Length: 81
Picture (cartoon, rainbow, N blue to C red):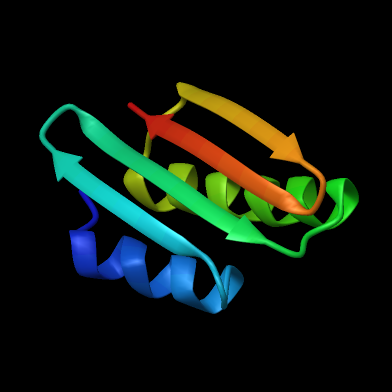
């Protein structure tokens, strides 16, 4: 399983100006991301890349993703289990 530090490092490399919260436990990984300045296309590309890499490294196959956007602000909740 990935460590919280590994997930945070990956998030910082993808979402440079966003704020995030990470929870890692034996059941999976939960991530909440809040930020501003992404177009829908850019945001979904970044989310897809992040989810794919986390699932590959963690060896999981199930994921829930919730995306909220208002103007250029966004909020994302990801659960990989």
